[in-house]
Length: 494
Image 1 (tube, helix red, strand yellow):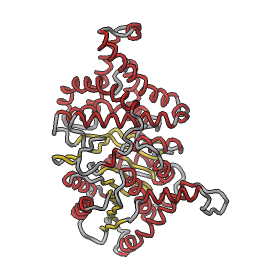
Image 2: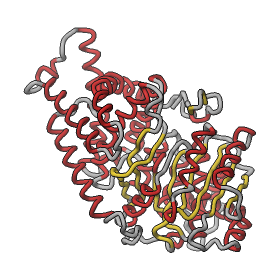
Image 3: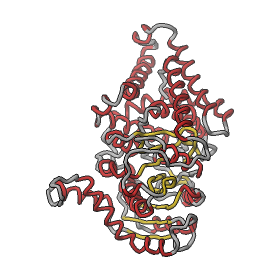
Image 4: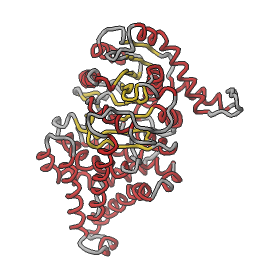
């Protein structure tokens, strides 16, 4: 939540949110409508068929066993909205193989449950094929080669060959029945989060083609996914022409573990909920969130290799940018929830904010033309992210060193302090009261002042530090195992 919002800005954002909610009600229809029936972009052959169902996948990055099993259990209860499940496990060591055991425990032992291993990371295979195509070794009937699609098709063919016996077994055991769900767990050598995410998406694409599923739901291994959220996301995406992805609102599962976790929950509730709705009104949501992303398979095929070949790791923001560059809209389902884990210490939360700020900066720097040609609102929002918090940072430093407000602030008309307080309070209270999360609203309102102070004094510094250290710690995701403490998954560099 921007801490320099004027009252007019707050009112504008609330109006946008109400319009967005109205748009969703009209696009998604009622709760009982059958999803996936509206027209959209021309589908690929694999997009036809079970239009109201998806293949769901989870990216597993050596998760705490209890948290991981809770995540998998939620997928066993998705019902008819999920026809297949893919679990990608990063690494093939003893600790990683333990996650395969949790998978089998959650899904049981049946002809529909399978496990396999890839000897080489699939992303590296994609890069090899991409470079082969660039060097002119790829063949094409019309003389031109799309290097990225050549690499993707080669990877998908490799996966299809590996899955051949699994798919044959599934179909031979009544896989076309409505109550059958194909469940696959695969592992590959450990490289990092980007590698396993790409591999999981690629395997899921092959499964979606074979089962004729048009949508792919993706989440992290600490996420709990209600079936209703997936069904409504499919409905929204299916009825929104030109939409390539949609995310749901997030709620915090472990909010009672510490004061910081509770403040994180208040932050999500009082800020993120509304902020993402503004640009989503126009199909330009700037982030496709990792814990709750639904993709149109055809759209993901367009962007997955360009996304994979990014130099810096900012996957949630970059996948949204790539979708935009390829002409796909990004939506936000703000009235349905997906539940995820939060940071429980101040240090880990600050590092997470720095990572998110780096993602925002990288997207602005790497794609200036896209940011300036995607409409006035999108440009204003991107500029506002940088300028407002930079101004707040300089104002805090100026006041701390001189004891006086800057000339810029003093020259603004009206009582800027009162405008700021009223706008922040209005936005936060509106967010909490309007949030689809039903529990803890009274407690969140009581903690709201502390949450606002925390954001006001930390976020500007996180923003500046992210800009200063933009290209440092690119591979922070590779730290695993030792960061699991006390039953909670801590990633100190996130």
